[in-house]
Length: 305
Image (tube, rainbow, N blue to C red):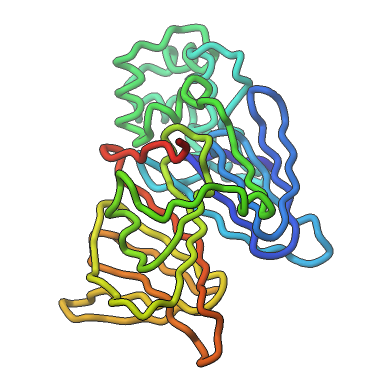
């Protein structure tokens, strides 16, 4: 069953095999992903992700929504999820009408009830849902305000840009350019001591998230100071041990993260990640998936170039 939701999604496979189906304006995409593979896509597009191996698969899924918490609309009965995006050839009025129908049904509301909710007559709402009445800019903004949805929700076909997705294979990571210096957004990555960064999305011009494969080296140098930066940060440890130094209730706090551990936090809180061996003869390199997010007013720059 396909669902769609706001706004972008990042998938990283940890174990097993998964199949990703994505309905794009160019047709149905079908990709098989294995351990170490990643998939970044516009989650406005209807998609289905499932395990296809003999054993259960395990993967990380991070959702980014610029306007509100990421969600999906599901029907209240047994008919399953509601499709939130139709074919891209439909006109903007048809797209808005289709989205209104899906949203109204997902909330279990009649035409009359939803018309009262958004402040229009049932007759006008029926005309908009059928694509028979034009949708003004004023109506669209009022609809967004009352339903607490971003404008992209109702005009997904017009706002989803190419590329629709990016698949990065584990074998390709060796060929990806490293980013040992943080560059323009220095504060976002300066929280990792002695680390190199391999970007896991490079083809999107303005991604809502920046996912990286991070490798931290054990060094004898000073650990450096804790830093804070706008947005949120997610870290999942793949190999080795990583120490998180931060502040809680005004007091220093240190947590050691083992493989499989993860943390998610407001990155304005001062913090720093350093390699932390779990055994005296352990490997001197730790690896993690780190994903940075910034508010819409501070959108992230392209990673390529």
